[in-house]
Structures are given as structure tokens and as C-alpha cells.
Image (tube, rainbow, N blue to C red; front, side):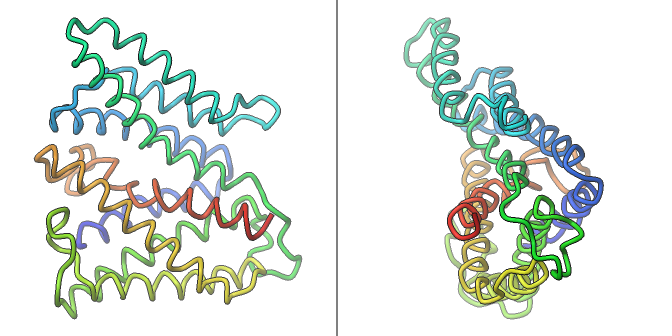
Length: 275
């Protein structure tokens, strides 16, 4: 969990700066993260014994996310793009002499691309829902950036709360085959922190703070699942970190893993409960 807190210290300020600048900066940060993350995912999959098609994974992930950044009238749409990617990656895998190697490359490349392309939901979240009330404290941000700020603060709160409570309280651990440092106390601390911060953020955007009873556990659980999913990938690959791009902090996937699951969770909530 100490690494989780360090991750937040690196990635959260970068995202907050992008939010302050506006949508083009957010899109730029997301696209860069997707490309670098997809490269790392491909390397981890290869180390785990699943040899993907090296260049096609990042290109596929980039194409899927770039589509979400286009104006609505120009977008191809996620389902169609996934279908196209499935076909093209299959064709590329035909070149492998052994059909088993080809199937492995096809599945691994598609999985790696789809996994990292989840970050595109950060951009989708900025497709504004209903306008914020004029008297909301965050009204000056507009709905486009306010919901993204809620996501960033909630994920940061979960990681920080889980680290601090887990370190102070300790106690029984869970899912140690994926990550040896996770404790039930840390899980509870992260959930409480995420729910409290979500409530404050909902109030600041003019929404009902009681919505945090759903939003907090939803985002906290998704953030934790994202962390564990990447841990499973790293364990399978025999790697401590996803990469070495950020000295002392690991790779890009280590910074964005929580957002890969938390962003679509919040988009789902906004789609159902707000729009």
C-alpha cells in the first residue's frame, strides 16, 4: 500500500493539472498513458508466457481511446471498433506458423489492448451530463471537469485511506496470492475515506451527498479491484513493477491501474443516476 500512496503522489497531481487546463490536456495525458501502459501490458503478458503482437496492442488501444476523444458526430463507436480490432488482430495472427501460437497472440493482444483502453472512460466521463446547479461550489468547473475531479479525489482517497489504516492497524490479510500487503483493515479504511470524500465532492457539484453511500463503495471497490487485477498480471509475469519508466515508482500501469476499473464504474453511475 505504500507504493499505492506513492503512485497517487505522482499521477494525481498530473491529472489535476490536466483538469485545470481543460479537456485537450486530459485527452493528451490519457492517450500518452494508454500507449505507454499498453507497451508495459504487452511485456508483462510476454513474461507470463502469452506472446502478444508487440506493436499492434498499443496501436489498438490508442485507436479505441482516440475515438472517445472525437466529437460525438465523428465517433465510430466502441462496439464497432472492438469488432474491427478482433478481425484485424486475427488476420495478423495468421502469420504465426503454429496455430496455437497464433491463437495465443490473437487473444493476448486483444486482451492487453482492451485492458489498457479502459482508461478511455476518463475521457468519456467528460461527455457532460446535466449542467451543475449554478450555486454549486464546483459550478465554475462545469460538469465536464467536475465529475472527473470527483473520480480523481475518490481514487486518491481510497489509496491513501487504505495505506494509512492498513499500516496503523494491520491485522488479517486477504488475497495474499495476488498481493501480500492487503489487509481487511486497510480495505475498510479505504472505503470509509473514499465514501467521505465522495460525499464532499457530490455536495460540491450540487448533487445529493447521500449518493456517496453508493458512489464511495462503488469507486473504492473498483479501485481495489483494478489494483488486484494488475497485481495478478505482475505475479503471473514474475515482476514487482509494470516497468521502470518512473524511477522509484515503477511503470505507468502501476500509476493507472485503479483508474482502469474506477473510471468505467463512475461512467456507469453517471449514465444511470445523473443523465
